[in-house]
Image (cartoon, rainbow, N blue to C red):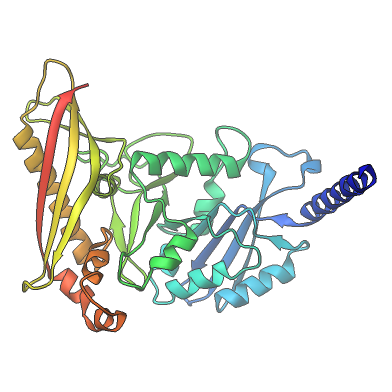
Length: 370
């Protein structure tokens, strides 16, 4: 028995040593970016840690390698040929796609091609970037801590948890894109030039690249990229994304002011009730949203006024999604349950019916002292 245990321990040591050497010989990709230029050429770049023995730190501890070709496959083939070490995609944290590539009809195919890469980490976050994805990736630096992979995960988790961005990963995006039940919303990213643009009345009702702030970190993830079943069709602000999280039943940082100017923090009590009346012409989309408002002691708000404002804002978000031909709420899931077979559902021109539908939003608000 002891002899068998000794042999197993020896095997474990030998295998771990082989794995360690293999990782040292690979180029561990942290971020993959895809851009499309005016000539329809595709540029693929990867960001990876340098060899620890180089002694570099901070900005110089990561390197970027890129290649260009007439298609994603060609660019990737050239990248593999020009890189002195094998590319290892098992540690990818971000897939960053420039807006020019994201707004093409081949967007869904591009996501599938990325997922098909050997050992690709399909739980990587997908960021649709205003402008050039490569420039966004170059500007990313681990300002807090030293590991970009850990810094990236914490930052994206923070914004998604507060409700300002979606949580869509590569595998979730591929699962939902084009099937009509619920159109995926991807994280919206941009590099802020910090030009002196006046802030909106609601500072959160803006998008990545336009936040009214000053910082050494120019990279921003804020808001969402909406899809129409084929590709990215437009953008949502951080506040609009927070309202969608409120519908889902989760939001941490949705705040507003009542008619008296007092701050009010809005949280969801539970997921909204969603109904779709297909018998009506046009179709009727109904939402009943349950939320709670926390106010400063001694300053109770006018609940009816606050509920009315929330109702108008949620109606406006749904109307915006309809204009973008994006069912980001998931009305399609509810509509599909009313059909007996998949064939019957597919014969229904759901997207056109959704875009022309009327909406009925009711907000049930209960306020309490914080």
